[in-house]
Structure formats: C-alpha cells, structure tokens
Length: 315
Image (cartoon, rainbow, N blue to C red; front, top):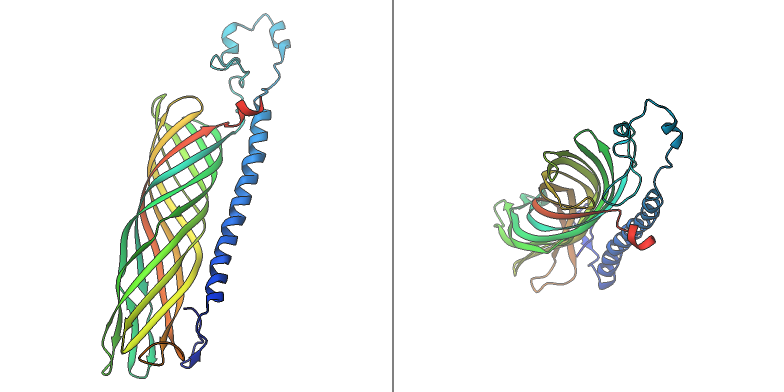
C-alpha cells in the first residue's frame, strides 16, 4: 500500500488501480528503454555495414620510387580480404553487441526514523541479503587506442527477486519492536558505460571502467502482528552507478569473451508506511512515516561481445 500525507491522520488505502498504475509506469519506462536501444542497434548496424566497404586506396602513392612493399603493411587484411587503414591512420570505431549473464550478490537495506506517535520513534532497520541471477545486454562502439581500445556503450539489465526478515524498531514506553518482511522485485537498470581495454597478449587483456544511469525496483515491507499492522509498498526509481574490472579473451577478430566484477548501486528510495486503525486490519489507515531503502550488489558477470554483427546479413 502506498500513500499518505506528512501528518498523522486518515489516508486513502492503496487500491488495485493504484498498484496497476505503478506497475504500468515501470513497464512503460522499460518499453521506452527497449525502443531506444533497438533503434541504436539498427542505426549503428547500418553505419558499421557501410564502413565495411573500406577506405578507397590512393594508388598514386605507388608512382613514387621511394615506396616499398613494407610501407603498405596492413593495407590488406588477410583475414577477410577487406581494405584496412594505413599505418599511422586512426581506424573507424567498431560497432558491437554484447550479451551479459551472471550472479548478483545483493543487499537491500532499510533506514529512516520518525516519531509516528508522541513518545514513540519508529526506525525501519535491518537488511536483506540474497544471491540473484542477472542478465541483459549492451550495444556500443569501440575506438582503437594504444595497447587496446576505448569502449562506450549502452547497457540494460534485470535482476531477480529478493526478500527476507527485517525489523521495525520502536523506541518508547508503550510499544515494542516488530518483526517485518521486506522484499524487492523487478530490479532493473539502464546505464551509459565507459571501459578501457588493455591488451596483455594477442588473445588476453584487461579492462576497467564504470557507468551511470537510471534504475529501480518494486519495494514492499510489512509488519503484520495483530496489535500493530504496518505495511508499505512503492515503485522506486533512482540514479544508479557502477564500477568494475575484468579480463578478456579474444576468440577471433569479431568475438570477445570477458569475465568481470562490478560494484552496483541504486540510490535511496522513500516508501510511505501505513498502519491500520483496527486490530483486524483494513481501513481507516494512518500514515506513520517513510522507510528509506537502498540497493547495492557485488556482481560477477560473463559477457560475450560480437563486433559488426550485421556484416554478413547486409552483404
């Protein structure tokens, strides 16, 4: 249930329509993100395909007697027979898509403090710790740099549901602490990332970087003891950031695997807590205060990057 004002008093209970509107709003955000990502894939794919035609060679360079075969090393890519940039000339950025899967060791914390009744200060406390499955994808551009490349990408991921016991701590002479259950579901994120790759050998490399963006989850908490029923639910949308590092394995010129670690965080979210005015539950409802939640995770991810994925289709 979501709602309530900043003062003690009756508050309208959350209806099925309210919950539907919150869920609908969340999926509209996801739909918008998906449309933007798909548009970027199609446009970047066409650009990458056009770049595959190569840079026209200036054959007049052969008219000079000073030119030797060694001066043209790298003009022809022996792997695919396509013209490649001359020595000393920066190559065009390479478009890629990536699939991501892994484990997210997540923590959902509760906080906040408010005097719901005179002489009684309420404080949601405790945290929930679960191992979640995470998956998603990314699209990006890779720019050649000394000893590696710089990658800029758009990434979208989702995570599983988590729940566990927490506490509604109450300081005062008339009420005691109440056990509660707190959950987060539909944990999603959409971020812009920057990664710097360094080649250790022709096959293996290292990378590091991070990203910022938006994300959220559906938060729920409840303390359902008969003498004090407290519930709260809200759709949290907030700023997200992540940093990470990992190792890469280049399987071919167009396919790269990487295994990495990331620390991921979603900014604080606020959820109104309501209590029932009757022992049996139900209306009228009283607003108590806000529970402040935060989501963080240490994540181990496996990613597969495919460069110029539409080359074969368009040709």
